Image 1 (cartoon, rainbow, N blue to C red):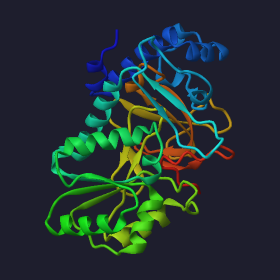
Image 2 (image 1 turned 90 degrees about the vertical axis):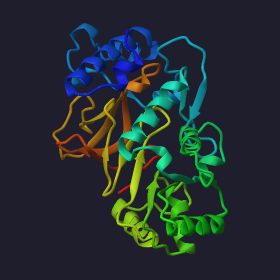
Image 3 (image 1 turned 90 degrees about the horizontal axis):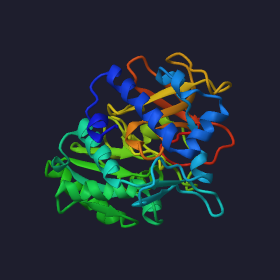
Image 4 (image 1 turned 180 degrees about the vertical axis):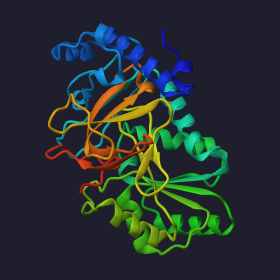
Length: 326
């Protein structure tokens, strides 16, 4: 049996692969949707000896099926954003404490103690709907920061501008987490020169603005906020873990998450580092759902296991979780 301790104390590639193979066998045996998919591919689970041989479930299955690896009661249902009439993904979570442990440990790995920051959130399109996993995470981080100044902002930009200037002037470390279009709206109202503030964009224009390439977007945000780099978060409804970029659009995963890049012409073949292909995600925290997901994102992997997100496959709906279409 795999425990959460096994997942969240991974310290080597060998250990990661060993636990990933255990998770694969567990999910093959307990997840009917995943088992049917593996059987369709004629995968013999006993012959799967490496992570490259594990089948990755297309992310679209979360729109049409209940992807579950146990029969426990559903504690949370996270849903993807979408325009009216669009079929959205549903991630049924039977143990929300796994999600909490994953994002808390992940944040700590990249940014240190949450209590060192005031956490400000500018996420209007997420706040205005039910079931956002991002809102669940940020709300918890705001509470964990234990700082009276932390909080959400909807359209009260003037108040946010005043607060950002005052906190930065006082030397307070701040993280401003914002959806892309709202951050652009903010810097159109005020040009900042922030020295103690991290700007973290979560991607997505949500139909409010024209999509931009990452370099152009980050240049505008850097100039508008007066910062040297723009941080980013790469997560999605169907996952329980996030990768983070501390600048330049280069993402790194926590120890229990990895990506592989598949050939766009042959989904069962992997391509060398530095080449562009489809992003496959291994998220071992997703043990009660599916830990092996083939996303609709395009990207490339670097030799040190960091990666870049370069866009999306054509004809796939815009999901707005850090997707800069080129």
